Image (cartoon, rainbow, N blue to C red; front, side, top):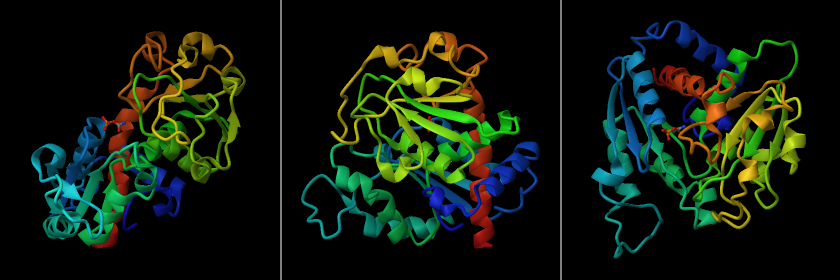
Length: 318
Ligand code: CP
């Protein structure tokens, strides 16, 4: 593996899941793998889980880590080729990225979408410019359209819990939110579950909240949430803003908030959320504080997902 930007960078998902389980059992077994290697974690946007889990994963592999909150502490970067930099951007990615490439062995980047310019967001301009100019492996800590470390974690968590000899029914359900949220987690979860191919996969949302079909093709789309939830083994709750009417909040219908009543038609489903969660807006307290919620296990498994990915990249470097 060279970069980790989407599921397309993973030749064998199940093999990578087994690697993550091995690290969960023996976190320090490859403590020498990252010796004398340095990882840079660049944040253009806030984070808790992604930042801490990736830092712990790197430490478990013996790497040195530098965290750079570039949005607050760095120069404002320009990403457009040929830009006349007479506005508020101070340093071009062409100048900054090669320097980071000389300081680090692996560069990890969190860069959210604008939710204004769909063309730029869906071309993944920012992360692709880092890949183009850094000259070292790049790992997405959530980009404009995808959150691959989260989705990989989600598959690890489903595999850890589901022991029956059949495919699980997994439902991704839209939830209300008070502000426009990227489509990244929904896109990425759909992309990974479809690529994994070991689930009966249904996506449910109000009309006009369709995600990009490049990620959802292969899933069943069902506008009736109750029908979608029937016999579900796992329910993934996530808000996203409109993809078609880009970045807009078209509905805030609280009926879509997952409550215990919604779960009655499921197979006593495990409820997933990437966190942070708006309690009693996206998901009710009664679910989050119950044994049905596996959101904390997902967050814990972020370490093993990141460690498996970093180890694959380090093996490719060494
Ligand atoms: N799930 C997730 O990416 O959490 P953070 O935004 O806190 O990193």
